[in-house]
Length: 74
Image (cartoon, rainbow, N blue to C red; front, side, top):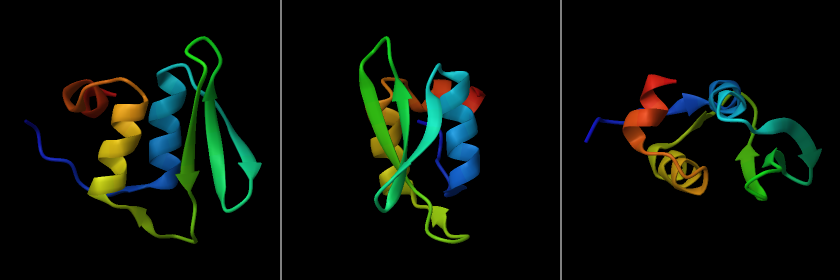
């Protein structure tokens, strides 16, 4: 399995957009990315200039229903 590294929130949102997600939509403490066809909403933390850690990144990838390999090719 390819090794994941922490990413900036902007990079995560860019990759989700290429997968068909719309957003970011503000709301609460996080912004949300929405995929209308799959009826999925994925919250993305945007706390200053901090990176999104590997554990949360794995959850976002799992929620987006793609493999780690597909994610890294984006």
